[in-house]
Image (tube, protein in one colour):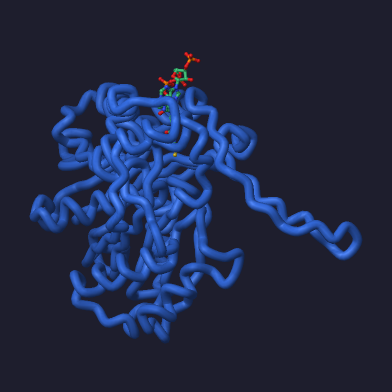
Length: 320
Ligand code: COA
């Protein structure tokens, strides 16, 4: 028994922010952003938070799957920008959709989060513990962004994507995950919760920090590495794969991965031009785009792969 995706959904805020809009607040240009990243515009949350976006994506995925919320056994929300320290965003989603029979908890693996969520639910389903699950990747990084830092503020957007997963034969065939905490400081957002009885400080949340070049080097090495690993271990050839659905951080990273894997760019769908890097939401929103455009057929082999803060990385081979 493994975990098969039987429905997808996504949610993006209405507010569109184009590169030219950002050029009005920091020293940048549409030309710089497009040529270095492939991003043209992004959606930014105005009122909605992470849990709201996640719940909306979840409702659409349940509808697509034809599954009732009360039939869910488990809800995993992958996010690194939850609305609160606790309760977990997954519990807020549970309440919003009425999934009264599910256990719900968050997974914190930043941009690798959805992959980690899929791999976790796969483990539960292989073990015969849960039958019907909901995996969501949702992030609202705009609230952790320093809007005066041109090195980061042009890169990210807000979104949520979800997949309903059922324990069936086929589906997620093989997976890998990894992390390297020593390199954690190259991509971080520090929340200082150092207040205590003695010093009485109040908690403060910082902005995200990123060493772009270090993250770039890590990504172009790790993504092809874990894709190769997952295919080799599953004994599936590159040519059998219909799509490589990679984390949408930068089109140059996707291009570099395609080159290293010796696969044509047509197999690497992208949506970062419209949404930017939406962290945990990139892979499920892209899957939802493909699904709703009728581009996925049952039996198609798809590799999903991501990388992010932690540092973390992971991949999975999925049979649609
Ligand atoms: N607009 C204009 N200039 C900018 C800029 C912006 N938004 N951001 C940085 N620059 C400048 C830099 O200050 C630097 O100027 P200098 O040469 O005068 O010092 C110059 O552009 C080149 O900066 P550099 O950092 O070398 O650019 P780059 O080609 O590495 O591209 C990133 C920067 C962030 C796009 C790239 O490093 C990247 O994509 N890294 C990976 C990030 C990532 O994937 N993050 C998500 C992880 S999940």
